[in-house]
Image (cartoon, rainbow, N blue to C red; front, side, top):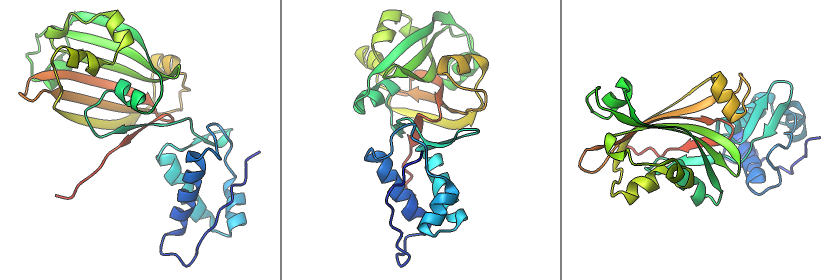
Length: 246
């Protein structure tokens, strides 16, 4: 049974009604009144209770779904999403982000190859396609829950990385320990359906989407640091990006 959260809509306010509703519901989630997995009040019931139109309520819910606060599932309805990891638009690793949010990161190293060839990765890092690269594939967990699969290609200088290091530390932490600091990166964010391996590792159904990110990073001198091709559970992950007017 969905809880009825006390809500007040001010029809004299210049703030749009849907935004007032979304703001108050967001506060209820952030304060713990609504907890991860809780069923969400039916759209029709919410509209009738607040004397709002269904399109207004639907827009507020859609905004919260887009922000990763609510999840819609066929046959289940709308529920409060699991805690979302917000990835800021800066050069940090997911391991760093989790620690900053007070969560416990975990890693399962799926692949570590110290001499592999990949035209796409080499081109992204401005290296000859015949360059032997280091390939790392990891399953990232947060509080023992799988949230993402991280695939990274590194220049051959990092062939000394070990499974034990990668299990215990974040990749950028290991790079910094070797005197390498990413200074600039280009990221592309997208979405797609999961493959069978991704469904199994991330505990997803075929209909649940993945967030994707590719990133090529360089140090302050322009030397390549890494090329990453990552995917994340969309119900537990979000990117926060600040846009400035030029």
